[in-house]
Length: 237
Image (cartoon, rainbow, N blue to C red; front, side, top):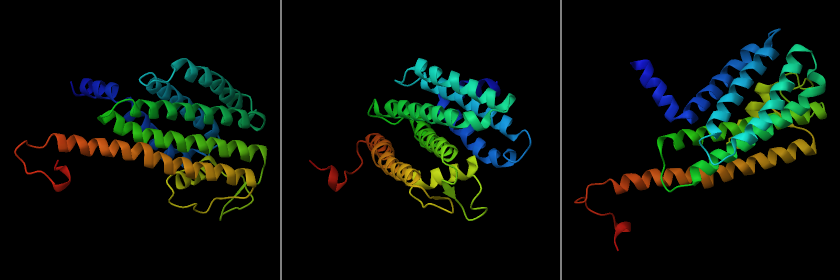
């Protein structure tokens, strides 16, 4: 019975499942990146995230066929990289498509959150999932730029080495949340331009989408207040 209730709950809140899987991935990636089969495991997990994201897009105004159309070539490219050792030639292409996929999913979720004037539980989870999707999208953009122009990013440790997915994901979250740049630094003008855009996207997302949801949540609490309760000064006619 408990398992059935959990299944029903997850079906009602696919955004929560997507957010949880993404956060688990961020914690697990550092353990598998250096392993011999780490890249294959990384790609398998990426396919799982793609599948969950497509499921989530089905509940939004976004077109599922567009998500599927982007996911199919991504899966093919990831398979070629994993089983035929073609990573060096295909990583830039797969990263570009994955960035586009995550940005489209994030846009679909934003449309889902903005289509009404109330904040549901699933929309609150969607706010977190959207933030993570945006951060992952920019992470794959940085991977693409690094693959096309080696030496694009430097860091405090092994400054000349290519940055890993986890390092670039850390940079992406730091920029999107406007909490700082950390020890990963963009060196080229193209990388700095992308970083500037991500900072702008993060500020606008927090100001326009998250603040709106918080306002609706607070508004709902005010509306549910007891009718005989005294009114606040700003509520007077």
